[in-house]
Image 1 (cartoon, helix red, strand yellow):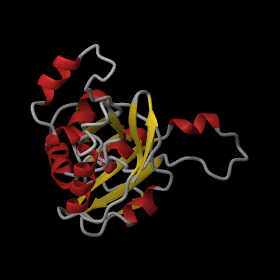
Image 2: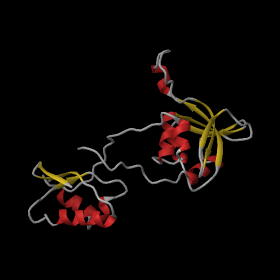
Image 3: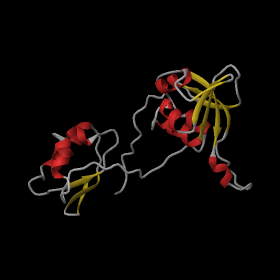
Length: 209
């Protein structure tokens, strides 16, 4: 763990640990500085919600509001992720549920920014997708399967567990159809996608302030 002095307090630049107990030891070490240090800033590690370790967190936020050493939680998006190779990503995807098969009509807005000489053209296309212990994406379509229509960004968010399929259907470029009936709500395919891709929030555990 590296701690530097900044802004009238300490800032944890990075930390590394192997077990949850080692993490708690590091938190205890920081707490032990409380008689000397009024403020400690740190980035929330992946899989950990620091508010769980605070006694009466909302009371602390209100009591210290406006102070130089105010207690607070700040959420900032410092990273962005999207699929660049759909078959490659799904070949390395192993899920406990499924198998679930569907057609995927995928659009990729990056195409309009690439000229004809670009060797990579994005990931748009028609695919038959399987999600489960062994996942895959194959070019083509199967008339017997329901169809998921999505942008590369929306499908990437669903695959990463950023948001469930049903939520993305309401707010992003993602919808489901079977035959001639399109939906923007919770049909069976969306419910099954929610169940199969029930993943933890993808919080990276390394970064900079």
